[in-house]
Length: 519
Image (spheres, rainbow, N blue to C red):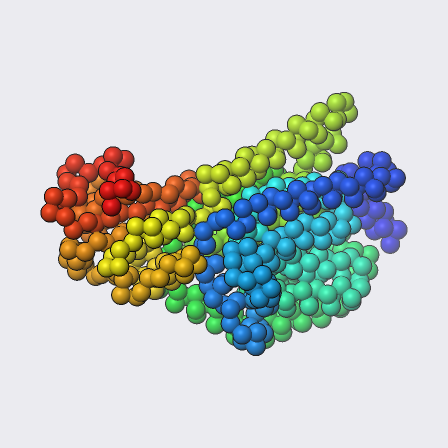
């Protein structure tokens, strides 16, 4: 028993690479909270900046539609209830729709700081809060009218409560963890990862006896395993229903083409390569030197992403948003690595600290700048494009939304909701969804809207018709990293002397752009 306690004490010492510096913080609680306040204010400013400026992303339209339903219809959808409350108070607008994710995004930085400090110490917790405050991924989803920031907060709370239950053998943490998990599951079924993380952690603890806490009760853990399995069985019908619906969506929209490499590259884009690299190294360091907390955070940060990569191998549509809730674990890994490297330095520690943290943080700040400038909030600029059309609209004009094609319902929702938000009345008859280019009336003005890359030189089908029969009249450039989100507007004018552009000489980079006075 004594030997075990001695080993555990040595392990706990390893769990705190910053322990020798913690004494310097004993009398600096005021400074600690001052730094946390500055980080929180900066995070709030970054997330509120241009909150209402961006065009709506397609899923934000569905958020608006769902939130406008009566309260009783949303009783099982807490995020819609919260969003509806915001809309009822402030009216329908981009800001009121995005206000809940903004609030939960800022709240997560403050609320998660205290349990992080309890587990990792103040410096790691503060640095993690700073990294989250400037995280391009977190800023983006804090300005997106979806539940992702709330899911991050609730899921992390559920997992940390579970960790404290194992560490302190207190059932109040288990109850809190269950409540938080059920709430997270109501937000989105990807909260099922919480159960998988907990089961995996218990499995390794039961197999690695030297890592077991002093009050580790095998019988209680076995009971917990049974409870988790029974809970999974109870929730399985809802999960299977989700899988069925998701398969129907995939059959309707087709496979997104997300490969494991493509998925990993998108995660790195959102994290930035340096932050991602620091996170991986930090989680490895935690796994081998961080004891139980290192094992837990490593599973938290890696397991969901690994399972989604497996899903990508099976050609299942996946999104990086499904592992956004693991961001706290990834940033903890990066923060732990930075503090560990700084603590290995004897001289010029301040300079080394600035260098290490700067190398990790500066790419995030650069990505933030691009997000607010050329990235336009990682959205296309469809609202501006539709406003442009509205200025030159004739009563008999028609619009052909050549995006999300041939999913006409999705394209129509995107266009009509955008038009409604700017009080632009477009009837269903004025929105075209032809099966062939021959169905397009050559004697009427037709506006064509595309999102993405320019028309290729050797266009076919509808794109060939656009290249031959229309002129580009405006473009609204926007980029999400390497992805082109530019919205381009083309116009067919029924004039005998206007035959469009000769296809043999067509070059999208030289496609004629008309002066607005010409049409």
